[in-house]
Image 1 (cartoon, rainbow, N blue to C red):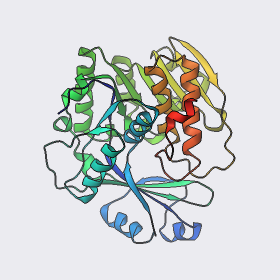
Image 2 (cartoon, helix red, strand yellow):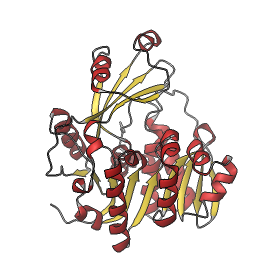
Image 3 (cartoon, helix red, strand yellow):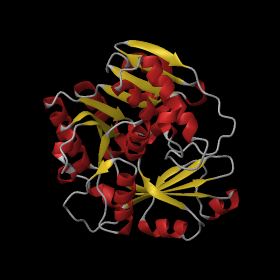
Length: 325
């Protein structure tokens, strides 16, 4: 175990991303709704895998994507998540560490297979996500390396973890430990349906622990059951720092009760929107830990998001640090 100080410890589902282009016809044959996000069992997972060709397979998961982006900018970070004792688990660990993100598998061995997210991308660049949770369902306090929490200036929590009760308990423990060590707590709301499922828990977490929030316009509206403007006005008074992404309309960033609009960056050749929000958080956080102005944090986040949607997948194809020049 290394004792080096990290900028951020990212905590989330350890998922292997399997990405493939697919025709509209084949998507229909699999009975998958275009643009949907659904949980799938092992049987359907295998059926989908048998019907795609030449997929790209890399370590993934929302928080892990943000961690890799943050490292690509030049940040120093670690990741905590639960993998299975299988080949996909080994792939996840090797790939994440090779990317420069420190990941150390927990000592507990579980029978469940490593989680997978099969992302099918149609010709219009729309993604249809099919997630097999597997080992991620077993994330609990024993999955957490407390030294990594103690040695980080910020912990970043993926909202998807709240889908499991034991994981929820572990998150509260991580937050308590972070506060004891005067570390900041960042939360990503993950997606609209995640907010719908865990609104009460998220509101409690924000009220008691969260310093930095990441959400898109649909998530913030769902969180407070308000229109966008009212939702942003609500959250800006409940956290110190944050960003609400607005897709093609740019973003709103917040700091100490003030809000600022960040203009969008036009992308002519849109290929795949997978990971745009994750990479926005990467750029924003890199700016934040390096004491950039809040507007520049948002601008760097936009640059990272606009870069990632030019190709398939949620991992950078270039050094994101080059975007700073």
